[in-house]
Image 1: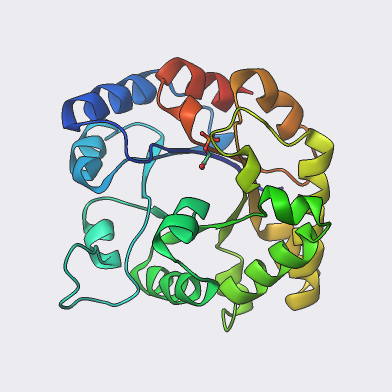
Image 2: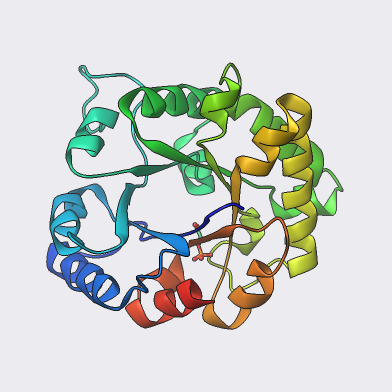
Length: 249
Ligand code: PGA
């Protein structure tokens, strides 16, 4: 049985005081029954304050990006060890906004995944098609290429520790959610691909989150699908109440 995982992607929102308040509110009200994992991914500047605010709670810390090199002259970048030492257990990699606005490719995401694993961070690897690609009927080939590229040369035991977030680009921040059937179809496709690339045991172990306008009123239906193991939440994670409603769902 895969442990569910709901992660909040705070994107470029919240100052240090705002982030501290939100994290404390989530930590105080988060269900402690251990049925699933709860992760918050604030901007870099808030990591240490949020780590402090969630201390002793069930909430875990993640970052939104990192560089693939161990260290060096890369002005403005952040290394995996830095995230780890700030208290992160997770890191989102290859988010569609990174791909779209900052030119991230599957090859770069692949290097980042390898570095994150070396540093002891658990990557949340994002994949997803654009609206044009869906309309052209090439969703599976696009998502399949992304999974193959991101997972290149990653061994089976390491692959098992990765979380995949399927986020159709047309559903991110738009208020348009994939129907639970559309989402389940792609999640099932990804799981079948993992079975082909690795084994049935890897396919049944990797957790696949859905992301893209997941809200309290549609979360339960999406999460009821057999291959949807959680959510990566943007907008609705910026408010403690709505994020926790999704966690409860
Ligand atoms: P959204 O963002 O929930 O605001 O659509 C999801 C994401 O980008 O991870």
